[in-house]
Image (cartoon, rainbow over all chains, first blue to last red; front, side, top):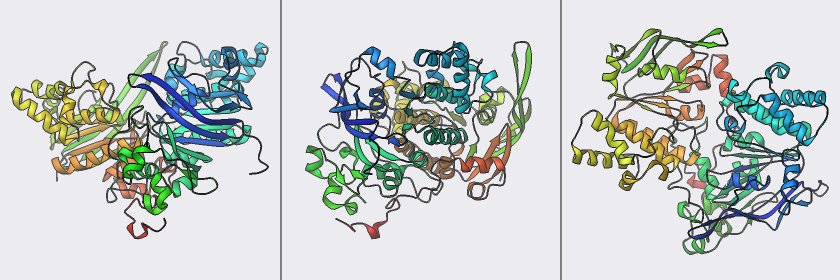
Length: 334
Length: 275
């Protein structure tokens, strides 16, 4: 790793806080990660774990009422927190692009696919009419949109869900960004289309040297994407490592719980799923101790209530934030 | 044994008119499907394959061009027959957010089927609502709340509870867990298995997630472009698929080869090894 290039994205101690009746609550709490060109990071966790909010800080689109803090939030060495509106506008779409969860809601229904994408290209890259058109067609065909010359005259409503998601990907690709954030981009798609989109993202990543952040709650998909995996719970990262490391040797009770509750093709009713008991905490509820303590089967009475566990090293690339693991190792979290 | 609920040779074609052009979509083509008593049958296929149209025909909210629906061996007459069926066959909808009236308290939403079908007086209704809430693992307090005060998983349980209020014999579940987080999904799946055993329910479970179907159902039907292309025991269909579409579906499952985590099946002999 010594001669690897400098990361394009460096995040240290990132938090997003919202005012509430109980004072300020953190929805994202102390995240740190790095990403190099051509690498991918999968962020896994359930609804409300802060995955999407963390991604939104990278585009400067957190809600107005929120407060974003970080010791460091750097894109290619430039501090994002200091950006003004014009600075964000130059970066968004051009350098960092996001594919949202719901392709139907993310596309303007009243303009054609061609207008949508060529507007973005004109805004960020400029060029003559013919150049913009050529780039539009190129972006669409790269995203696997069939016969772009003819079909780009269509409105989003005339396309299937899979095609709409390809348009959203083409839009994200149109200005040749260096980082793509896919926020549950394949969640509502059929498995066969999901597989196509994942393959496409992986291909583009290798082909264009893109950095990719892939947000999902499906750990099977995490395996398909590869790279690093960050498991989030209640706004905090609880486990971090290479995808196969974390999935084959899960060290946090929450990661283990997630794996046990997801059916795989190897499971049937003779090996019942083991749901994680209880429900996810509301923002702020888990503050103070270990975030997962209320639902954790191996929580340590006082320690987990009072103290937030710091990282414990599992390997050079794998770390976990768990008091029980720190005290007893793998045996403790079985 | 006569199947409790079956579709025989069902056809449905939709006609679309757009810009003077008429196109026909054969949504369901000569589909037959059987559901035996106490059985969970899976119905898989991608969006647009006709799964939902078929299930809607089976409960009479969509018309079939031809074919027959039979309940307990007897043909169901259009309209009248389906109205009579509405107590015995219940449908759980995909979206737990839109399926509940936003201004109606959960308790009232659950009592409504009893009022419509004139079952039970006020006091007994309240009792039944409480019993059903506890059966799906919710606290009785929930009855006083509004849908927006519940989480997605709680809402889906409420939807299930409402479908079960009339003590149906057949439950049709249309993609009811696809929008849920895995841990919540696991809770709902365990609940469905428990209810099936406890109430001797028969279930048609529609999903595009083959992992869920594999876990839940004994038999499976695979639909592709309006037709059933493969059917049989889930174990068999998934381990040795004969149709190319089924093979393609199976191949597309994300992370299909990833191992069950150590300790997921109570691997106690290795517990306490380190530390």
